Length: 226
Image (cartoon, rainbow, N blue to C red; front, side, top):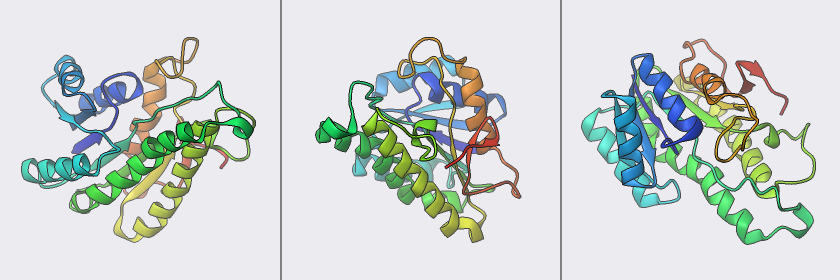
């Protein structure tokens, strides 16, 4: 199985790579920095391969798709993990819309761009899975004030998840959103759950059986309200 994980040089993404490699996957660990991707991949072992990828770049998406096609001919798992701007300092009514726009570029358009670029390779995969790493902050039923750029961009990612799942259901491509919970990472800050626990729910969605759910929103394998 060939799996690509974005934003994977640290935090949840790196741990998802580690766990998938432990299950026997060939893992493509991507990061914006070539050096950061290489260093993380070196630490995780020979089945983890670094790729430079800025998810906001159409050129990068096309290049990575071409590289995977040449090297492997298919992709089985796409984990859209890269995300930015947990903007705890902002409120919607006074938000800097340039900050919101930047967050949407990475948190929504990035996954959308990669799904489009990599879909031909996923269609060639044996058990194609797309996992969009989301957040409880994206749940409309639980949403309140604060973190407007992050929450709105992740809510839009959830909507994209639903649409792609419906459009790809007949082809056997399972598409789900996963909330890893509050995890002790650079973005999440101290006090959260261990990174391995948050990553495990992402890996669960990446390794679902062919009759597994699609178009869902999950945390630890259990549904989260939209």
